[in-house]
Length: 86
Image (tube, one colour):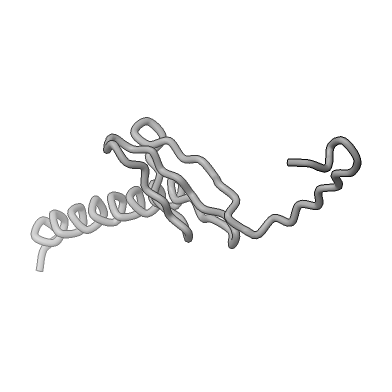
């Protein structure tokens, strides 16, 4: 078996490895994870925004991501006297 027969396969495997690592790196860079009690609102090219509760792949030029708190918020309102009537 000569080197000239094996070399194209090694070059092809090396290029495939570099492409796979590049795709993995882009996925790792653009994936946004969302904490519990928070929703990710993704505005993309469609008319309705998409809501994601665990995370999503956000491409910065095409998508805009916003966070929204969806956990229970307790408000204490103290209204007395003249301010007491609704």
